Image (cartoon, rainbow, N blue to C red; front, side, top):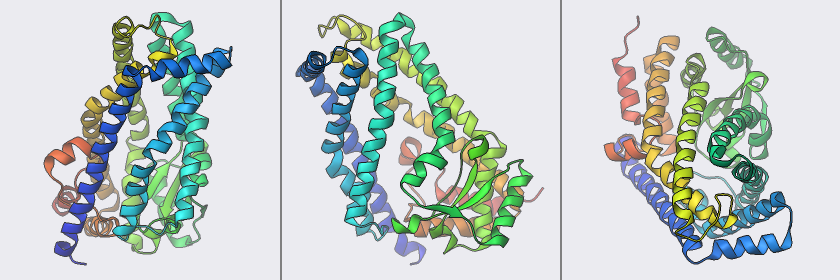
Length: 370
């Protein structure tokens, strides 16, 4: 498929996922507002409190019911976005049974991680008074660091098979690249092809869990020069300390969001008949404030991410001195992943955490060795 043949399907594919994002956003807001205004949140809070005396168990039951309920409500949209349209555009290898199994695993993770987080937040609401949001932000920072460390060794293997890369020449090449930025890592093959035709690679983990992850869909379709350039971009993130910068940025925005949520929660208590910020029935107020802040800050977060991605692209070119390989890799990624090479600037600004591929290719074409 040449560039012109690819452009229209890619733009339609992008438009579909943007529309699904809007539908999911509107549905989430509608559900939270309805949950609050109909009194359903108060009813559910009273129901769990009548069955459990322990406040930790009350929050766990309340959160568990919400997680399962939201999963069921959003299941059709998840199927459209993650299964139907992926198959329609010939990007998926996943079977119906495999998709259902992944949804169950995702539900299990949401219950296993999300419910304890909610329990801690409500403990802080009960015990730390007006400073709860400061302590909650600190907890979320620590939780994020732990999750980043555990992701490649605990969470990712639940969905994809990982095994050490057998291609010794490529492995040595990538390990040498990692050495140049001061990283000591293992190189692993990630079995993406069982579920998708899309190509991807990553550098994940912290400390002893750091590892290079190469999708088999990348290994099967890209040259070693192209793979090296893709991984040089990931190594550049390590060289620049971008993971820690993103964690720090996320911590700052989380504290701002929690502080605004505390303000909104306290302003809304009397209006909706709640007596305290720790009232479970007031959860929709808290969730609406956090979700609304997340929407407002999304373009800012994406702009920050695009800035770091541009720096990583430039460093990848400096490390490999291979602009032709970089451009070739970007074009292959666009073709294999059906990416819109030239998204509308407004869409890029609002929703993209990476620069548009045409900008990344242009950067390679304009790069000059130092």
